[in-house]
Length: 115
Length: 113
Image (tube, each protein chain N blue to C red):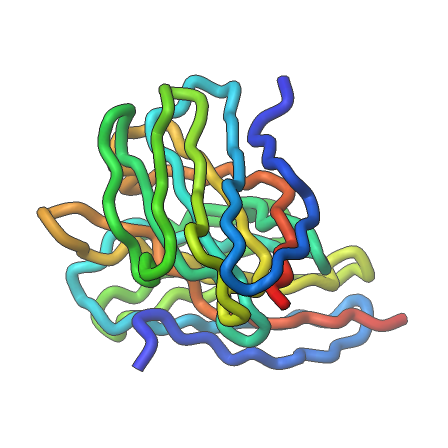
């Protein structure tokens, strides 16, 4: 039981390049999330998916797109990377639909640098 | 103003000390409150949920004060291994009647010998 996995662990991009961050969970959870964490800012929600087939914007969605590929997988895409997107990205999942009142389980994170 | 506020610290305490953190939230309609722990360069992990009546888990006690809109975490008999960043999480109302988890910036705790 791996929990939540993320790939890649590290990535360096040049401004304007695109990439997709992958996330998968094996806990049969309904809800999945993408966060970014910047020094002094805490974790901020980018997008979330309350159930398979739905996605919604969080606090900081600009510059990102997501796909809930199936119940297990939730990917985050940067179409044209900018230096402001340099951050640590965490994926998380939780059991209930909508996740109100529910524990989140986090992946190990992806450290992204955009030059 | 951020929805969820925490004193970033660091709180620097000796082993065996008792330390308390507070976290305030701005939206009175918020539901569900948690404390997570994050070690350096690692992912956050749930420490404990916070219930209206207050709850305890070993050396850790969490309390919720809805009237004043804050939650607290008390750590008794601090251990070196308690050194970490403690994140307050509040589910705040969002679009379409949903709620989203909102994190505070975290409070850093350093326990020294």
